[in-house]
Length: 167
Image (cartoon, rainbow, N blue to C red; front, side):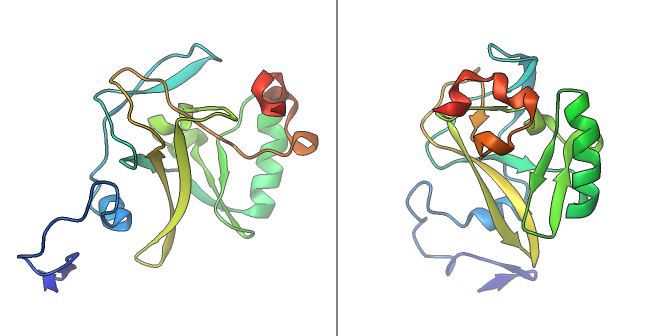
């Protein structure tokens, strides 16, 4: 089914899918995301926080940034590591998002090996995009964390200071 060129998830009379099972690609495409606010983190520097409650499986937002090659990410990463921060997110073996200059508030979500969010690379209109999803029901004001998936031996020095990186 399509309306004005936009695919629908089913015929207009179809019941809504169970919560959390709706097409998340469409939510990213239509920018149907939660409001995220910045604040001082209880873990490190700045953090990203929910403005309103969210339910398990909700799309909280899209991690955005400048699309750069892996080679450019390696070059920038060395500079960022000297500054003790990085906003690089690998999409695949060739491309990386750099949120340092062009990112949104989700770049301030901190690392945890026990996160309350999941980061997923999804295809939207043929492009790799990063959705940040609620792992659990969360109250307004909750600080957001996801697993940066660093291997301990390859983690930048600044990231190794987080105690739960080794868990």
